[in-house]
Image (cartoon, rainbow, N blue to C red; front, side):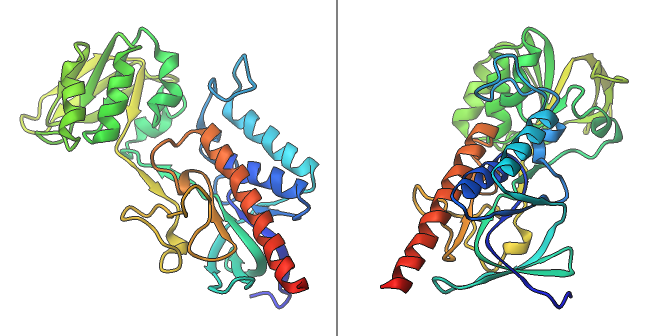
Length: 320
């Protein structure tokens, strides 16, 4: 552990749309924010080839370019962006208390406010062919990328509410949707199952798993295996959507912040406030419903404003 302990006003953990938007607003409020990027600088958008639904880009923009521009905008106002990962935290229970964070298990930092924007990681199947074609037709967000497969044949993996909702969404814009459910029934609610069954172009396959994603540079087909009969079938598709859930990146905050049963940080009402004074959460780390770049950016703005108001309140109490 380093002997020199740095004290900052605003520590932002994570560098996706939420983290960088929080940094823009915090820097403009003269909070002198420091952003630690984490293991994936730029967040999930760096694995997205094209972003077509973020306001202000009429021709669309590729994800990595967009995140570079967000970083540059944050730095223009004085944000300090550092490559590194916060590996542990000690969050104060007291209003006006100092929060402690350790970066890369070596550097200790003290912060008056902390904005958590560590996001959530999509769960994948782990197949080599699937990982190789991420960004080339394999996606974990139908709402984000489904538009690019309009009128085409696609497949989706999953049997829960998210999978059912995304399959229904895809059925409205794609020619055919093959839905692979690993078990002999769906976990989705009855209402969501009815929607899937009502869509005439959804081919629902129970007891079916992905054997291999076919294609060199882009998805060209899918090999499916019936886990009861062992039969393997190959179908032509251009897009594969994985909808088996997300895991919020909240491990280092467990035991200190209130979370729901799946690990998402709970925030107070319409704010980004957590149960610890001076600690705020924004983006996918506290949002399991929308998970869009624009909503993450919106809560990043909210977190910075909440942090600014919190510090103003502390300062007012000190001076009175």
